Every structure is written in C-alpha cells, then in structure tokens.
Image (cartoon, rainbow, N blue to C red; front, side):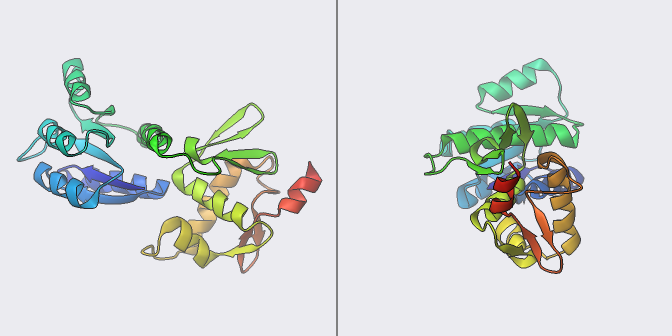
Length: 234
C-alpha cells in the first residue's frame, strides 16, 4: 500500500515516513503543496497524509485540487491548529480524519490502520478474506486477528508475515523471502529487524510467547508455521 506524506517540516515528514514504513507501507513524500499535487497525479497513492500549513499551497487548497482529480482517495489532515472550525473545514473539504500536532506514535498508527481498513473494505472482495492458524483467525481486510472473543490488532506487515507463513505451512520460510515479500526488494536486509518484528508479533498472537506454537524458529534458516502441530495441540 502506497502513502503520500505531504509535510514541509523535514523532521515531521521523516518521522511519519518511518512510522508508516515500520507498519509495512511504501511511502512517498512531498515538501510542499505543489509537489503533493504532482505526486498524487503520477504516483496514485492509496491514501494521503496532508499537512495544512505548507508554503505555496496550503493543505486546504491541495485537498480541493486532489478532490477534483480523485474524489475517493482517503486524506488525513495533519496540523498544529486545534480550533474546531479548522477541523470542520477540513472534513467539509473531504478529509477522512484530522490529527492535531503534536501527536503520539500510537495515535498515528491507530488512525492509519482505521483508514487502511476503509481502503481494504472498498476494494472488490478477495476469494478468501480470512484464514486460520490454529485457533487464531486472521482477517486481513480488518487488520485484526480473532481468538474466540479476543481481538488482536495487526499492522499491514504483520498480516503479510502471517499470510506468507500460512501459504507455506509446514515449510521453512527463509530470511530473504521474508524481506522480499514483507518488506520489499528495496529494503536492505537486517536479521535483527526480522527477529525483533517476529518477537513483537509473538507477544500478541501466541498463547505462550516463550514457547511459540504458531511461529516457530528454525535456527540458522528462518521461521515456520507447522499447521499439523497446531492441529494436534487443539
């Protein structure tokens, strides 16, 4: 999924891009409103994070221009403004959400995931919308997993990892395959990146993260989902 981040402050722009990339999105960035409009036309992002106070064209003007090209692409406004009238104007122009600066990482992730769910829900239904790993049901279109009444929030990258393991059930998925399929060919492989992500994912989906049943380590090679083992443990 491709996201455009239009923000004139380089630190905020870089920070947002890093948050999104850690979640599994591909990001493109613009430093002002005019560049944002050009990138929307040529890159066709799946959704847009748009700062309001930018040089040249402000976020409201950019939103108007984007809506003439694409009336449905989701837009999240980013702004230091907190007055209710600013939020109302942004929403009336067709924004899907409004985040006030300064904002926390968890808030940004929650709002991004909410917009992603709307994007996924608007697409034509896939032949298989969910799959099971043991007692865990993964619903990619929701960015969630369910175990009974328990609901587990997932990132886009979490879903990609679980889909890959499920598709290759019983087989070892090596590190290069994980990076190519779940991070992208342009990503520079780093074993710690994968191991740390798997460790965090296990904390949320495994009944006992210290003795994982869904994502098992194959030392020196990679990771594996052993569907037969999970069935026997039920």
